[in-house]
Length: 77
Image (cartoon, rainbow, N blue to C red; front, side, top):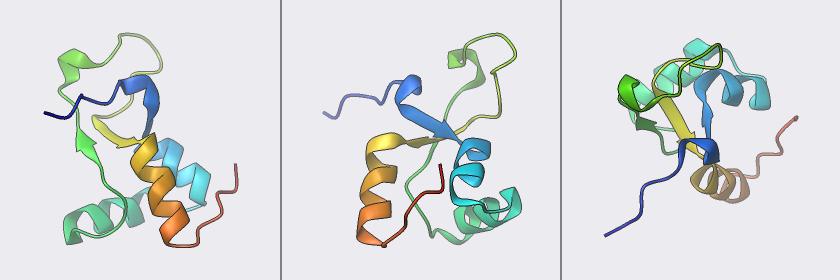
């Protein structure tokens, strides 16, 4: 069985949009179309409380880095 990805090792959709300079709607459309990097939906009870609690979509960092490498994407930040 695969170990779950810690939330600290994943980006929110807003963080990824900023990293790739993409609009949030682009990432949402990709998810709906089943394209783009692997993502997971996190139950809100598993999210830490506080101002950093944004949305429930997370992009595991290891999967994101692999996607960037295989698709020739150079992150902007």
